[in-house]
Length: 384
Image (cartoon, rainbow, N blue to C red; front, side, top):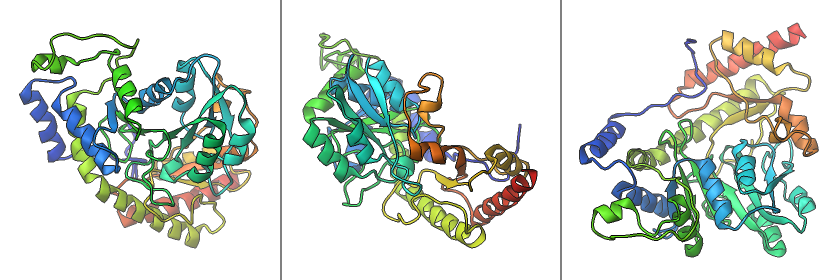
C-alpha cells in the first residue's frame, strides 16, 4: 500500500460523527426514521428552501434518476448533459429509458455546460437539460433558464460538487432549476459515506420524489411502527432508494461542519492559484477568476499541449503526491463512444489533471504539490 506525502483526498471524521452513529445504534431504529426528517429539514433550510423541500436518498446517482423520473422523462425522450462529468449523469438518463445527448463546455477557462451548444442540440424529443456545476462553480444558469423556459424543458442541477454554494446572482446552487441533486460520497465536501439529496421548490415534485424513493408507498414502516398509520397503498411503481438513519446522523454533523470546510477549500484554491502563477506561469487553471461562495470541490489544471499526462502522474506518485482526473468525458467510454463531437471538451480532456484538495491540507502540502508538479513536468518533457 502506497503511503502518500500528500494523498488526493484525506477524510477526517471525529468524535461528533462517532457519537451520532452510536446514538442510532443505541436507539435501535436503523432504517428511515426521525433523523432522516431532521437531516432533510436542516439541508433544505441551509439551502434557503421550504423545510419540506428536500428528500434524502441513498446516493446522487439515484437522486438524478428520481429527479428525471419525477419530471416524466421516459422512453423516446432526450436529455442534454455535458460530457465532461461523471458518468452517472448519462446513466441516470438511460435508466429512465431516455437518450443522453452530449453537449460541450464553454471554454478552456470555463468547464461548465455551454448554453449555446445546448440550444443547438435541442430537438422535438428533448425533455430536460442537466446542468453540472463542475468543481462547485456555477453554470451559466440565467442563460440555461431562459433557454429551458422558452423551449418548455425541465432544468435539472447536478450540484454534487456544490452544497452551500451560490451562483453569481446569490442564489443557492441546486435550487435555481426545477430540481437539484447533491452527493454525500466519501470524497465530497460533506459526506455520509454514500448518500444524496433531491431538492426542489415545487411541492408536488418533492412529494413525487418522496413517493418514488420508497416503492411508491403512502406510509413508511417507521410511521406504522409509531402508530401514525396502520396500512399503506402503492400509488407509483417506485424504487428502494432510501437513506438509513446512520447516514442521516452523519449528515447532520457534516452539514454543521460544512461552512468551515468550504472556507478552508476556498483558501487552499486561492493559494494554489497563486503558487501556480508564481512557479508554473504557463499552466492553465480553469475558473481562475472565480472567488465567490462556490464549492471549490476539486482543483484541476490544464497541462501544456502535448504533455504525457500519465508520465506526469507517475512522476508525481514517485514524489509522494496522489493525483486524479476529472473527468474522462462520457462520450469516450465504450457504452457511449461515438455519440458526440465536442471540440472544446475533446481538446482539453487529455490535458486535465486534478491536484490534491481537502480541508485539512497545510500550507507546506500545497507548496509540495506544486513543486512536485513542476518536477514532474520537467521529467515528462525530458522523456518526450
